[in-house]
Structure formats: structure tokens, C-alpha cells
Image: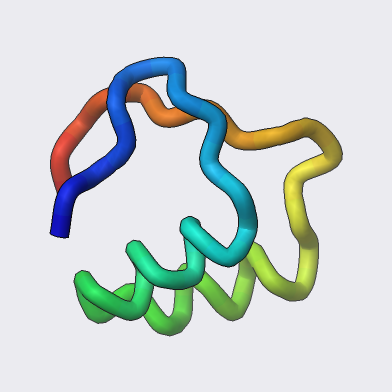
Amino acid sequence: MKLPEKNQEVSLPEIREICMAFGYEALWKKIEEDPPPRPFKSDGCSM
């Protein structure tokens, strides 16, 4: 899976897809229950 470039805005559906691809279901559940107030921007780190 290609991850977003540094500072690229990432939508909630994209965050979900990334979490599922890397086995971070628990992290997605936390994000889904309390979504960020502002759009998320990638820090450019790999998973």
C-alpha cells in the first residue's frame, strides 16, 4: 500500500483503509469514536 506523502491531507476513509491494511483495527476504532476536529495531515512516516 502506498502511504500519503508528507503534509498530504488524509480523509477518514483513507485513514480507515491504512489502519485495516496494517492491522491497526483498535487504532481505527479509537479514531472512529473520536475523530480529529481538523483534517489529518500525514507526517510522512512509514507504518
